Length: 134
View 1 (cartoon, rainbow, N blue to C red):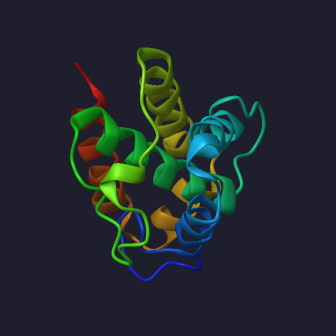
View 2 (cartoon, rainbow, N blue to C red):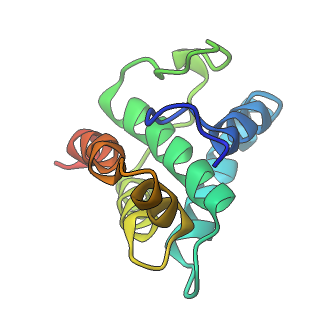
């Protein structure tokens, strides 16, 4: 699955997203986060694992910026001061992306169900939703 735990950043897709975010100019990070979330949120067919993992990581970036907290990034690669600003449309997009990642036609869901860990993985998404919700 390319994952070693249920945490937001405990998978290859999140690692790739963080690397991309780290190497993106601060002024362009908001656009990268928005594009990553939209790719999952707007998918009308099957959501690929890599798209889902990156979207969850992007939602965590939005949640951290929204809450004004440090990003729980184990690499420490993206300091809190470098998080892109957030707005209500970005928060809404992050919530839609999380819903899409958890939907029936998502490889993310399928893989966690196969590993008998879906409930634990879904709880991680619920924590992000709680931070993002008003």
